[in-house]
Length: 502
Image 1 (spheres, helix red, strand yellow):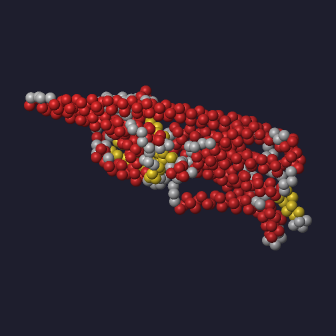
Image 2: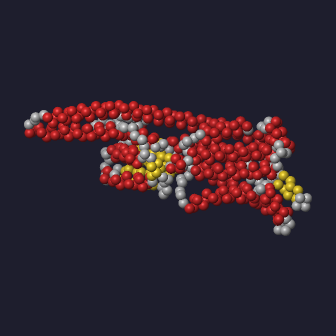
């Protein structure tokens, strides 16, 4: 048991150190620590009764020196009962918040009211099962309102109802995670964290329901005539099989939680290493392209100047003009690339992404004349922090590539679909086309500077490399999925404004 608690503390520490998925990690860490405190509170309560020594020793592997200390420490049982009830209610609350934090966030009055309902319901339970409230209620109700049998039946009915509701909240939270998985399964970045956190959460909550199904409870029996309060035993299961199997369940749970955390760390390191490699290549390409562009621009100006001084016959004047125009166009193209590779600081401003995207699509309306444009946006999208100029450049690069990929299709068959969604702490912008697609062997290279599978006269291999750099500079992520002759889907993940505030 104590090894299990140590692993939980390790997981708790790891979750607190996470920067991504901050809200879900925070609630999972709170759930874990509340669960550990609930176990400690029950052990503390059981230690006040020597009858439970063998049970606690076999069930929780509690050392004798710890048992003796807990047994003789001078803390009233009423305080321990309150601590047990508070911790168990905290587990229920944070477990619900954990699953809720993965849901799509919809700002409305109904959501605001709903966020107060659960805390109010749990707070009512705390007062109902408080030993002092139980004592005062009994003194008032008996015998003026109810007899002993009626009070016992009423208490049993209330406890059965609260147990059913509490278990229902936990089951509901776990089922919601299954529906959330359907929303994030295609997002590699979110899926990694979701599976790791989801497995840890599910194993812990199953363990909680096995041990603490009864909590919160009053644990007191009052006699008005004798003016005496008896403290009841914890309703542990009579099934010996549970006590036999549970230590092994904890062992399996410990290893699975540790394995999930290990996988998260490994995948996260791999992703960071890949991103660092791409950024390093981009930085190297910046310097190379600057020198190259500067050199070529000077050479083109020299060629233009010499061509203009040539004396040619009238029949060759058009050819000379054509050469000059070609040099001029090439100069402008090189100048654009040169400017785009300069280092600049992002000017992040609070932005309504729905409005921003709508305006951008309206500006590019002429470019979408020969394809079907479909746009789907969630009703509520949190504000984001973006550099409007650079982010527009990144989106234009992706959309222009998408239009290029559909050139071989007839205009009526070209489809460009844009989705804007809100999942957990991330805003997801998806740009999907039904073009020729990208061969699997080329996907890993598409963000590499100066790489292009198309003729270099039209594509320099700078656009997507720059796009990757812009998205990463926004603390975002970019993913791509493609199938040949089916289409390509670029997904951009941006943290919502709440991440910057927190």
